[in-house]
Length: 202
Image (cartoon, rainbow, N blue to C red; front, side, top):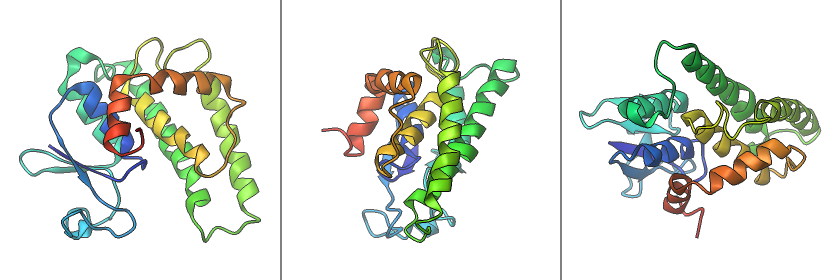
């Protein structure tokens, strides 16, 4: 398998999941600025949408969109229980969390990374984002991870997206459950391996 990624982007979450799964894969750096691979290949020729992540299977099939890739990875190693079993209520609850992270947090951070966003609009963006972060903080109350005591692939997505706060100068230190979660995640070997591979951990 090949994982097309850009350092620190949302592709970090499947990068973490692949390490958690122990699956063999080749990380492929795809710049979100130049849209080229390290060898000069036009990334648009691989993913016409131009963004990451993209997972290319050994047979050449390509799968896009982080939440789908995360679940695919988890389902390759069911014994590791990186996601609840398909068809269970818990699986749908995890999918609900993945959707929330994707639509409310991931997209919520988007305008703060865009230099074209008007300065007077950013406070409203941050206010809305903080309400969503407050909700996710409440979901972590009394838990080690989103689904309870054990890691699941949704945790990789939350860790990745919540980590963007520092880049856009949004103070999330008041969310104590989220802070504890992030510290817990940072200690996981798979997280450290993915961060190191992306040049984000020395």
